[in-house]
Every structure is written in structure tokens, then in C-alpha cells.
Image 1 (cartoon, one colour):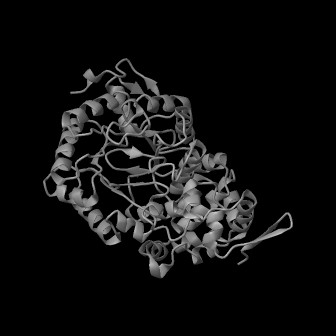
Image 2: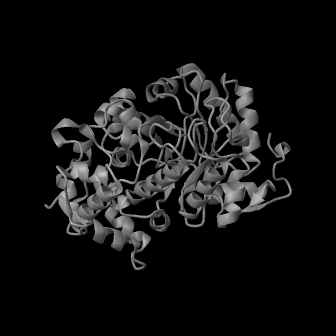
Image 3: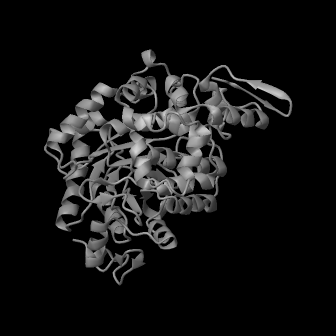
Length: 453
């Protein structure tokens, strides 16, 4: 295994595969903060030259966190599909990139190798791709999942309706939910970030959203994004729970900071398997974001793109219905401006889809990041063209509880019209029956909340 490259007569040597992965990464403020990024652009080129020659087998043999030190590394290694891995293990990362982008490589072929990929492999090939490469490759990856409706079909773009309220006032939540629904939003989930993380408030919101959904026969799912242990207790209060949520990270130590581990998530999955109110078979929901391991000093000296891919390796175990990266929410310490946030959104979408996840994105930024509204709108269109499974949707695109700009109720139908994509088929039929919209075309009752009871 050669970890050296010569550029313009200067030899660059790297001490490990982990260092190569970190220094091959495009510029990220989080990697700078962690002290793992390339010192200058030519060193980044040298790292990419080395990375392009490494084989997928060498990446498997060199995870960024050792097998004996991390349960996520063990989970990925012990559950890897050997047949799928054997089909690609001989390829270099550069060859793997060419194979993915080749016109003859179909969605079915990409799906067939996904279970044989470690997160380090997905991250490595991502680092050799341009933004347009990531869009082309992401659009080729098709991941189909089912809960109460079907997500991920070609020609569709779904949305999570996010009717948050700063005091968890149920009527306020329902007002926002109704508004979003009549703009064609919410086929991925009606998902609330709660202000009060208790089993009782979680159950109350779930009952209210479940009643709205049942009363209007809306083919979607409801979820309250409280901690997984709170949701488990809420289930004992006999509330309807279509999806169970949890934030996840890419190392055992970072997940411990979230208050979870593999054992707990296995228990939660089994409880939902028996007690959920949805049809399934997919009924889990995970959120991630580049930089979350560094923020808890649990990154093990690895770069944030590779650690993000490892979060997807963890999520893959539970065959989720939804996964999304909250791409700019952690702050400019990790993604400081529009180009970095845009790049991260495209990276995360591609890596998640390549690993077999129904990947969505909260295209957002915090107010102290250097990103404009125009850049944020551009990212939403890029993601729509890249085959993103779903985007967020909330009133005027500004979350009144979490206080950050994201995707508005109006943005979702606008992006659908631009990229000619429809909602999930069951939800699209429901919208048409109410006169709200058909496909990406608004109907006579578009925006009219009186169509709902």
C-alpha cells in the first residue's frame, strides 16, 4: 500500500489511510478546526492522487476507527455482504468512481454493491468527485422504501412537513400542518421537533397529528423527534407512532453523547416492530450532519465527511424509511459558507444513497454562517436534480422554534416544477382528489386550507 505521491518534484507522504482520507477532502472549516485538513492545495492534490490508487480492499482493512475500539466499526465489518464486496474489492477508488459514473452502470447494479461497501469506501469515492459528479451519481442511485406510502420512486421528490411550535402548542402545530399540506408538502412525514422532550407531550402531539391524518385520510406518516428513550415511553401511553426518530453519529463515542448505542437502538427497533401504528416495513427515521462527532470531541482524528458516512453505516442496520442530513445547522465552525454547505449537501446525499439509504436533506444554514438566501435556493434545486428523496418544508422557510432558515412550503412545489417531479404516488393521488395539485401542477384548491377538516 503506497501512501506517497510526487507533485511537481515534491514528495508528499502520509502516515495512514485516515490521514489520506482527511487531506483529500475538499476544504471544510470543521476539518481545519480538528487539525486534519490539507495544509495547502497541492497537498490536497497529492492526497487525492494517493487515494485514487488505493483499492476498496485496502480501505476495508483500514477503517478510520479501529475494530477493537468502536462498536460501529464492528457492526459494519461483521454485517458486510461478502458477495457484494467481492464484486468490487479489487477496484481502486479511482476505478470505482469511473464505474459509478459510467453510463452502463445502472441503478440496479449500484443497489447490488451497496451492501458490500464500508462507509470509508463511500467517503473515499466521494472525495474524488466534483459537485456535478455527485449529482449525476446521486441521481443514478434509487432507493425505494415503504411505510404508509412509498418514497424514492423515479420522478418523485417528497418533503417533510415540519410544523414546529416554540411552546408545543398543539393548535399552533395543527395550523402549520394544515397550511403545509395544502401546498402539497408532507408526503415524507409530518414531523415535529418538540420544545418539551417528555413522553406526555410527545404522545399528545402524535395523537393530534394522527387524528388530522386519519380524519382527512392523508397517506403519510407522523413523528415527534424527541429522544428515542422518550418515544419508547410515549408508546406505553398508547399513542399512534408511525416512525421512530433518533439523531445518530459516526462513532461509538459520538453516539454516546447522544445517549444511544447499538443495544438501545436494537431495543427501540424491536419495540417499533411490535407496537408501531404504520404499515411498514420501514419505520425508523434518522438525522445526521457533518461535524457532530467533532462537536463532542469524538472524531478520533478523522475528517467529517468520512465520519458522516459512518453514521450512514450505522443507520443502514435498521432499514430506515427516512434519513436526512441537516446540512448547515451545526454552524460555521464545521461548514462556514455557501460553497461548503452546498458541497456537504451533495456529498451526504450521494454517500447515503450509495449505501442504500432513502436520503433527504434539510438544506439550511445558521444566521452566523456566510451563506445567502440565493445560495440556499440554489442548493435545493441542485438536490432536486440530483434525485434527493425529500426536502424539508416549514412556514416561510424559517423555523420559529429552532431559528434557522430552511425550505418553505412554497419552495417544495417550486422545485418540483423546476425539475419536473411529483410527490409520492399515494400522496399525489390524495392531493389530486382534493383539487390541491396533480404532479407538479397546482390545482384550483392549492393553498386553500378549507379543503381539510
